[in-house]
Image (cartoon, rainbow, N blue to C red; front, side, top):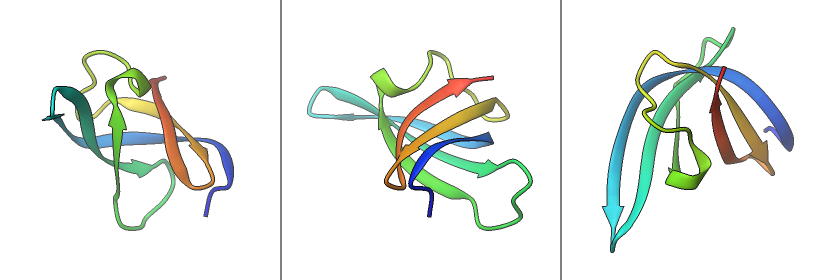
Length: 73
């Protein structure tokens, strides 16, 4: 469990979704140096950079094990 902080990762898949007019992104990513199951999260468009794509190297920010932001490295 990641209480707070950030970790580097690689986006494996991303899909935009519209829920009642609000845009979200479902992400599948793997932390650098970690050989486990890919992680999945849903973030609002304000929490991720524009034009995110699979293969992008990113930094994933956490608070109480919840993703709070994704930024490109």
